[in-house]
Image (cartoon, rainbow, N blue to C red; front, top):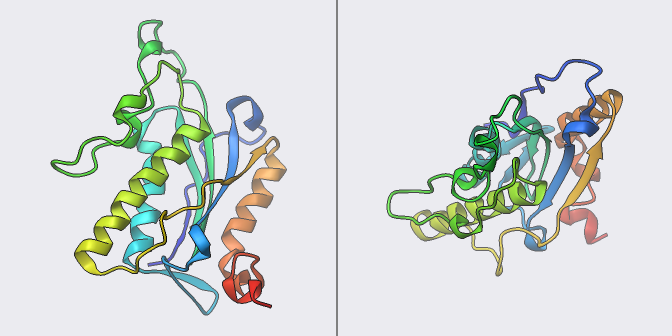
Length: 202
């Protein structure tokens, strides 16, 4: 399975991405361990763990009407993606107090598994980027731990993801196009990638 996905935001050309909150996000595994697959002939080939991470990121948009997922690539030890966040249009006042964070954002993990963020629900109209990334990290960590125990996936040291993550606000259409291209071409540049452990030993 390839690690690239490009839904392309449904926003029209010329849309003010800054008004809604469009973000280019990068998350890296702890110690830059390559846990999600391999680059083969310039293409990312996901293993089972990588497929789990890929699907969890794609599912982010299904957990809130105010979140839209654009381009995405899962690399051996990191992930690049574009998230667009906006307030739901036409929400009635009574609806605007409903939480889009916590259980609705994280979703059901598995039968018998309690919600990770159920106690963190807020009254925001839309989740923040930090809410979204935090829920994604929690879900993928739980999924990966299950894979380690049930299927012998390689263990990770302490935490699956680095504590911090990179974010960049996308303010213009040309910036969106440039970042989409960067995401699409990322696997082909793996040999020169800063996150490639082989380069960090040089």
